[in-house]
Length: 421
Image (tube, rainbow, N blue to C red):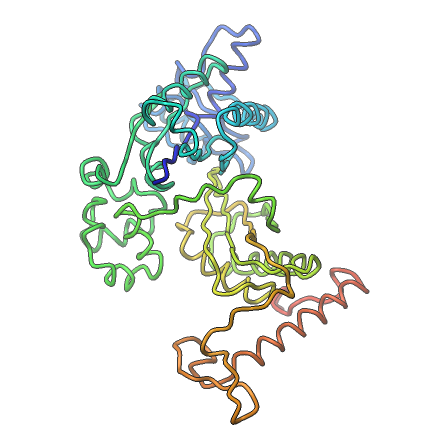
């Protein structure tokens, strides 16, 4: 059984700014007064990025406009963000954690998952190990972290969000009913505002209510996202920590958007461009991907991602695009999106033999490809052939690659990327 830690810096931007000020002779500690880290009120970054515990008592929330925060607390102290400083503190933190184990998956500048399983024998218990890491971080760097402990990443993250700051919490499967089910459904990871409103209309108010609801009802109202929320409420999650070494074996691309994306249609266009880029690079490298993940960075710089294994290895533009859209729909909670990314992993050689499904078996009596059973998906349901279409798509992708190679990346574009009249 895996033991996973979720390590989260408490109010990272504010903590790191406070530590740096004190290190340079400052007399105040931003963490002990009503304070925030925020941007210029005139810019699109004019939101609260981090807040002190004192500021939270005034009802100030991360992500709200700075001007609103000052209305709630006129004596509020604000410092501008320093992302270069944050990257440096993040780098030092990760370097320190690597002295324990290389099995670390950094998911944002201020949080990561650590697979404790391989070093568990060095400690009397996971809690003892987490307390040592937490206390050494404070002694070494001067800021605090919360550490959540469980058997998968979802429950570890939920545990780290319990009482703050500077705490260690467990949330093992046998503790779900006692510790998690009593929480409001809005506390569930990836339960966005729009999903919560839908759940409330179904008289689902707590995580326990959600866990005990028929998943078919949730799917009816929230599609695949409803099923995912139900699984999360029941503690089902991924226990695989994707290390930096593993991630390096993949090919990906991401883009920071000049304007926040607020609709699925806008996101779809961005994902299509990214899918073309990732698929093109896979073909250039002679690789296909078995695993695909989509990354979202929200307007308040919160980062999340979702991944899954695809049915068969692919480097097709449209296949990767369709998978990415499906992942996005399951992941997105309706908030404005600042960055989108697609990453492929578990790569195999393009010429490696492919495992065919029963629907792809050639029928000798016709001399061609014949569908042996109806499915519910698209063209197969209409009785059209799968493999010839896949061959056509491969030839099309290769032809586009050749054109772009000869005449430049912008030589040919999809019609949907041109502005309408």
